[in-house]
Image (tube, rainbow, N blue to C red):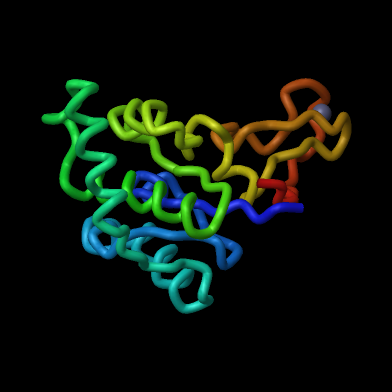
Length: 169
Ligand SMILES: [Zn+2]
């Protein structure tokens, strides 16, 4: 199996994505942008465990991002951090291998398409749940999403329990 590298933007951490292997990258600006306690803890744990690499992209990658954005007309919607993050994804792809950008930011996703960089949204793709818990009915085994707040199954009335999900991303 080939290693899949991941580049994480601020929204990936805020969305609750937890790096669980050593192939996760971000830039120093993202560590400074995190404000809420939960995403700060996720980042701190990932750094402590060696699951998160802080990396600077090179100037070639930065220039490629700049020129692509100019052509796309998305100039104003992307921050300096956004552009650097896209450059990092290009850099990791060039130096390490297959990479996926984890971001919920539509402007970043749009430019990713132009740069032929695969991306995934943390909130909508279920990546977050891949590492999380799933709610399953003890009786009929019906699965519920995290937002199901009742303690009993709506089909058979059996209690619902939490099941750890396997990692497959
Ligand atoms: Zn049930």
